[in-house]
Image 1 (cartoon, rainbow, N blue to C red):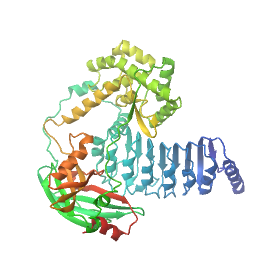
Image 2 (cartoon, rainbow, N blue to C red; image 1 turned 180 degrees about the vertical axis):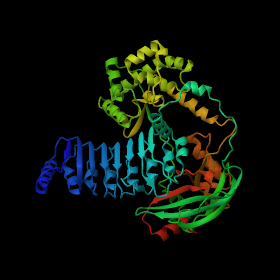
Image 3 (tube, rainbow, N blue to C red; image 1 turned 120 degrees about the vertical axis):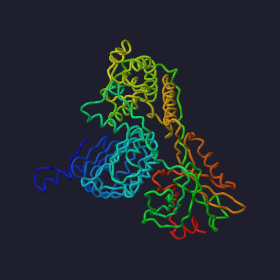
Length: 574
């Protein structure tokens, strides 16, 4: 249902009369599930929505509304679009929307604090746009670390500190759109290298504007320049300074450990002047790690309750929870007339967020049993298509390693194309967005949840998907031949040395170490400098590019309203 509360014709009195009629209409509970407030809205219009508790999809097009408390009370909302809210400054009312899966915030020029979005852990699609003047900026992107179910992410605003490192936690996000900003770190190139979802989106955009797409024959004939490029990574002995700073919000207190490499000499800087400097100390060691960055006595006030003093870091790293699995390999597949029509929504293309949302919504509406059988049917068809995909690759019509993408293109272009290409692989034609077609073999995954827990559906094709993922991981390990670059991660612990308790921060290499072994590797790194661990270790959620010689290596953020000096005395004093 679409409502334009303001009439564009008539006198001012007549326009107000139309507005009052709509407000009166909305103040009565109605069976509305999809509502679009077109035109201009203000707080009075938005407050009129309080009776519409059945709404699951709400779009407010634009206006000078500030109070989202009524929208936050619409607990059934799954999709919310806040358009051109030029006066909006506070997203906290949305924290109650536990069912929200899609959120779009556009043109909120006065909004700086996006942290409340981090509590919406069920979000699968988040899009944030800029104001018309392009000056929209956020205080921080730290909130994205908590959105582990995101499938699609679009972000246009700048960040006050230019720190885009939290985005590095989004390696599993399928589709990422990001506007490049001057001075951003990591750079767009580094982010693209680390985030497959961003690389796919930018590649698809580049393909869309390329009047002469590249051909594989050209690629095969191309002669690569084998001249070795200079290695600009940070290696060998290094030294520098570690700085401990303090920041606060109304409800949190944070300590940040910043690292500045002074030798070798790099174009580095010191921590932001807006942060309160608490202490600093020197460090030295090998760039490959482990590095002892911080080692100081814990405050006297904490020595009687070390566990309590160490605990409470809301930013500590935690391993990703393994999804619950449902094995459907023995389930009866769906007949063709129930399976194939579900794919028509994509129109033979697989690079649109809206299409994916619609597909998942329509599939979920058919119930859990249908989702399981549809996904198993997909797995069986993918297994049937695999020999044809390998024949296509063997004929040098596409690159090795693209089996899943070719299988996806065979299925994704419909039943007739599928049967034709299986009978005659030579009839296959390469789609313009082949790299995106790989998502087809993953359709159906992530739709079902049990008690907010993600469900992985095991099908007849799951083993092949896993094999392909293993090959990608192996190719990444050997991609640099005999060159190996360390990936330094920071860890914090309390150690006891000669009867004295000390707070220790180390940087250690996680390259080639599986995620579930990181905490053990952190403890080994801490112990390499002596003593015994009595609290921790906890790992950082903060990523630092050591090759630049400057960055934030660790953050301790606690929920606290303690006065600043009292907090510092307790947690960072002597």
